[in-house]
Structure formats: C-alpha cells, structure tokens
Image 1 (cartoon, rainbow, N blue to C red):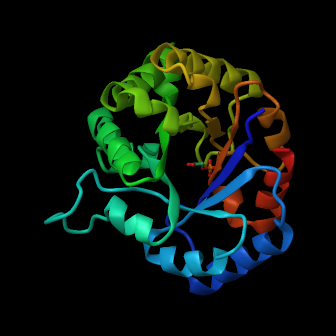
Image 2 (cartoon, rainbow, N blue to C red):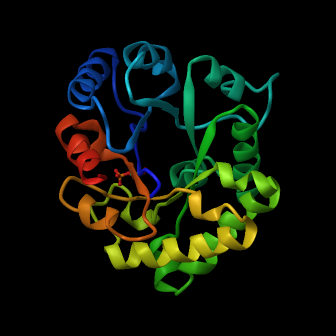
Length: 247
Ligand code: PGA
C-alpha cells in the first residue's frame, strides 16, 4: 500500500514567531510518521522552515512556482530557487491562483513541467466550483484541468501528486462527503490510468475543509491517498490528528 501524503497549505498566514512554535509543536509529536508529511509555506519563510525541519521527517513545500526558468519576471520564484531551499513539493494551480491570478489550465501545465524539471514534486490542484457542480459539470471540469497537465507532461505524469479540491469546500467548512470525494478521485484515477501505466502509484489527495473530525472517514476511501489541508494545518493539534488519521 502506498503511504498517504498529508500536506499543510499555510496560504498567506504566519510570521516568524508563530511559524517556529507551530513547527516545534509538530516536530515534538511527529517522530516516526506513518504518513508522508509536508508543510507548504509562504516563500519568504522557506529558509526559516528549512532550518527548523533539518534532520526531521517533515518535508518542505512551496505554494507556487514560476513557469519560467529564470530572467525578467519580477516577483516570481523559480524552481531552481525553491530547490536550493530544500523544497520537495510545490502546490500548482491552486484554485485561489486560478481565481485571483487568472491562472489558465495551460499555465498550470507549464508550472507542473517546470516543477518536475526542477526535481520538485508538483501537487496539481483541480476542482469544480459550486456552479459547476450544480450544473452537473464536476467530471467535465476536473478532467479538463487534469487533461491539460497530462498533455504537456506525458509519461512524467507518474511523478505528480493530484489534489482534488472542490472550490466550494475550500475554507468554507463544507466538506465533500467521503462518497462525493471518492467518486471524483475514481474518475481522476481512471483518467491517469489511461495516460500512464504507473497511475496506481500516483497519490490523489483531497483538500477542502478537511479537519480533525472528518479526516479519518475521507482518508478511508480507496482512492483518497492523503489530504491537502488549509485552515486545520495552522493548528498543531488539528494537523497532528489528521496525520494520525492517515495510518
Ligand atoms: P481548507 O483549504 O482546508 O482551509 O479548506 C484547503 C486548501 O485550499 O488547500
């Protein structure tokens, strides 16, 4: 059985003091984790968190990556830069970036490629809005988003992580039911299988108001290989409970 991946998405939260106490609380409890654990932090804090995590079994992640290798791209952070700070995972195509920064499927596919080329595992986010779901378009939307990534990345697709994050569940306290999530994960799994003989080992994780109470049920679904956790990743006790639920 593949290990589950529990990744925290801190979004634009934290400060030096709060980061340190959160990481110290996690490290005190996570000694031999039963799951792969990562924290995806704001890029200005990568050096701080890299230092705190050194020698410990929690991986470092970033929240975005430039589609470009280097050059005149003010404000962007390259894959090579992330790699220098020990970044192992990078969230790509989060719905907040698709929505507030107009990231297209094509751009998300290019960022995925840039992460892979930099030796960083992209956590590629897909998910439908409430309007999409109500219009019966959930499958169509997530398949279109994933197809763009598969198209540009070919056989390297087996190296990615996919995060199914229904937009209506993010930060709202409304979680997809385990059955709803499993249904979409199965669709994504089938799509990956059609593209890669290695699809079985690709981790498909769920995100969207996963918390200490609902994690165990979601993680028990056959195609849910972990979680991408926003709000609950900022509270050590909650994040630790979720990690524990991934055994
Ligand atoms: P949430 O965020 O857990 O706060 O809903 C998840 C995410 O956006 O990755």
